[in-house]
Amino acid sequence: MSRSTVTQEELSIQVTKQEMAALQPSFSSAMAMKSLKFPKTALLPRFGGIARPQDVQDRSVNFTCSRPKAASVTDPEIVHEESSHALKVPFRRIHLTGDEKHFDTYDTSGPQNISPRIGLPKIRKEWIDRREKLGGPRYTQMYYAKQGIITEEMLYCATRENLSPEFVRSEVARGRAIIPSNKRHLELEPMIVGRNFLVKVNANIGNSAVVSSIEEEVHKLQWATMWGADTVMDLSTGRHIHETREWILRNSSVPIGTVPIYQALEKVNGIAENLSWEIFRDTLIEQAEQGVDYFTIHAGVLLRYIPLTAKRMTGIVSRGGSIHAKWCLTYHKENFAYEHWDEILDICNQYDVALSIGDGLRPGSIYDANDSAQFAELLTQGELTRRAWAKDVQVMNEGPGHIPMHKIPENMEKQLEWCNEAPFYTLGPLTTDIAPGYDHITSAIGAANIGALGTALLCYVTPKEHLGLPNRDDVKTGVISYKIAAHAADLAKGHPYAQAWDDALSKARFEFRWLDQFALSLDPVTAMSFHDETLPSEGAKVAHFCSMCGPKFCSMKITEDIRKYADEHGYGTVEEAVMQGMNAMMGSNMVKLEGRSIFQKAIQLANKCDKLDYNVD
Image 1 (cartoon, rainbow, N blue to C red):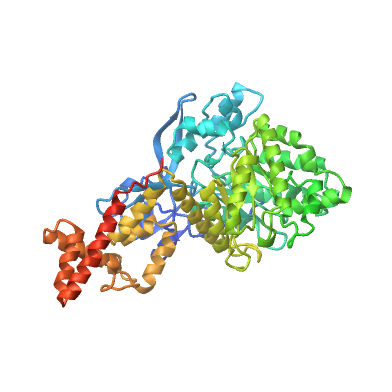
Image 2: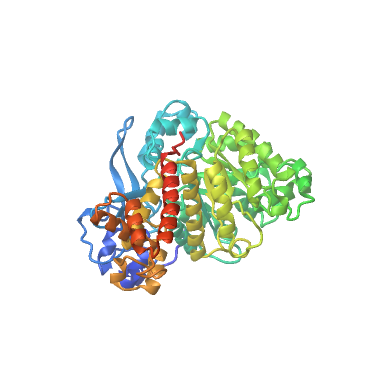
């Protein structure tokens, strides 16, 4: 496989003070040094200095500059009992100022300072070798889970989610969660997708026939995972599909998914009528051998469903769905993926490739939402899901699409019922069609809604949706938009650890710990740059105000003053301090009495609210 030459100048990256801000999202604490030269690397040009503990022991670094600080670290004592394998499970440790305890969050960034020519460490090699020596009819996580076996991957996921390994095993066994983990993808840091776990985000990358290169796609992969993508789909449709995928897999610590029909179509020069089951089957085996973790296969696009799209405003908008539909109509035959579903399952259960059953008939406009074609395919997805489980193949179901908010619940309800609670994986959905250039927003609204209802994996949408191939900035915007939606859904679902992050940032905000606010945010770079646009001095990062309200009108500063006043004058409660302050400022007895009466009513109402129990089991 040919790869472009990287010069020594490109490999040796000098991190300047100006570049430091751009490095902070991942943020080894080693970045606190003003000037730092790193070893040979062909990673993102401005991200060469991000390290994990095996490269830099963060606790020994002296911080010398005012920047948000965090490090990617691993849990030192996670041992798989059956194999005695020690697992290094990564998480991101955010260092806070003063006496505040550090805060740990989920980390998807993967090992850094690794040359793409070498690829990432093969952390799963010993795990896979051990299980293959044991033998068995199948090699899937579902197979082991049904046998009552907790694999290394299950323990790894349980540690990342702060849940018990037995709970992870039980969810995988019943099909309510999947761990996409092809046995050939040895570089993978396992993760879990399921409605009872953190909501995950997928980012799409891939070269097109018009624009993009292999190098750019590897950079997009690293960039997407740096900002929090939990899985990545390679949707390449141009030249060098196989080569691009090889680069991506060897440099990916997150699961990689594909749509195999794209490469199959390339093999027949883009002529859908020339496709055959044999070409498609060989493509599946080729990709499984490379290490692809999950396939999107549009096996639910049946011949009899295609006429249901005739009266749609936007017809069939799925690329894979339209390819299968064209083949079916050309030969008036049933979809070969549906006809050969059992053979597809036999391939998948030998490599542990999960199946993402595609929604080839998803609505591409608000007008077409929740129509008969969409739900007919969903019903077939349920049938295919149960057949896959019978052969111990992990499955998730893909969903829409373009759905107005009031129609979103019906999608979730039908998927849970018809597909027996298999994980739901949705593209948004977009909640309106009127905002080209802003569809990362229109879809994040729908994603937060459907995520709160139970969707497990959200496929991101970038600002370029419907307009063009996304670049690196678009990828970041899409990932951040969807991390917001996913976290909002986690809060709504009552995930036990979700609110701790919000509480940590809120506390830092109220205490005017600006650097901690930046470090705790999803995008520290943007947060700090927005603050520094109007208050760039170092002193502004300890000031008890920002440029929005200034020093005299900051509500949090005023509240802080009230509490200080109450403490100094021994009033005991904030309410008493406010009452005294109002009395001192009122100019007339009438105003004083009316003000006191109004405020007393407010206090009484607040006290009643405090006595209510909002906890829901």
